Length: 370
Image (cartoon, rainbow, N blue to C red; front, side, top):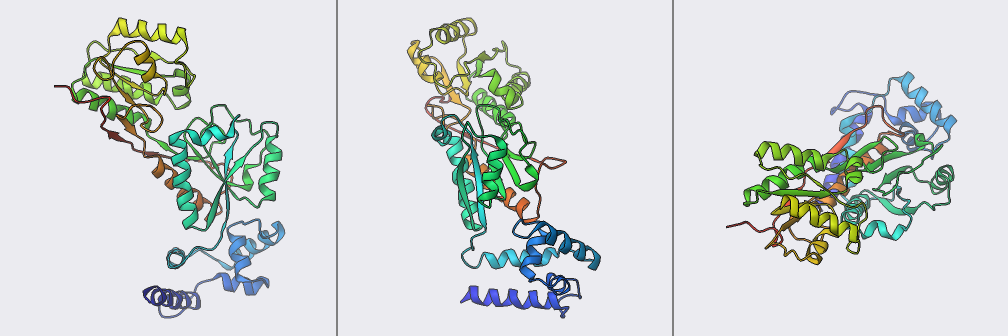
């Protein structure tokens, strides 16, 4: 009952604004443009947001006529329209492609963080009438061929999750798509992105470890990975060491780039040597294998060395940083749909970076010291 009543009110207000009624002054509307060009108002609406559902020639004609008639989008109408969409199930709007170019595509979403990106993005997409599709880019397929496949599927929006290897986009034409990426591991295209704020999260984690009574705090991360992330782990760690006036300062341990190196004798020797030299009482790590490697070397967690993870999703300890990855996925999809709705395609002149703050999660692997 309430939804029907609210929808009726919206219809009345929209009609008044479109026709110059008492709720608003006369303005050029999509209906005016449609009558001038001789097409439907839905065709005009699609052309104004540069949808490829309308031929290029027709889009250019409609956009030219709209400019000549002095058409300006009405933000109030957009808000009312969006409100009406919330009153009932969203109609199907299209497919958003989640580009997966991993050597083993099934491995991508086995990472807890990335699976949560997907869940958050899929939730928002469904509410807005979009379908998020895991679009697998074969390794032997060129980027131009991928572009053709996306166009054939009617895809207008692309979401790029993290990748281990740099992606070669070749002659891919980004002007055909609205695009957004997760994080800094994918360095091209230079699109808008949403990611965790690793610098502030590291500052928060090291500060909390210090508050819990740890004084010889170490960092164990892959240097190459952190370079792709902008050096945020090392930067946050060094800044916090200086802020807290930790003395002596424990230098970071250059962990292996591999994700599972328990069986590496060289990695074990390097880690033992680093521990014996600097005697950390707590370690913040990004490496999933490191907690078990410590146990293999005979160290007890947390009795001998306490451990916190930069991701409580993917590292086998229960204390550390909750990167709020579901929320990152939600925000990314909201931002991508907004780009699509306003016709923002290709790489922007001024890319936007949205950083989502993480939260500390207490756990038995790093308890407060007496």
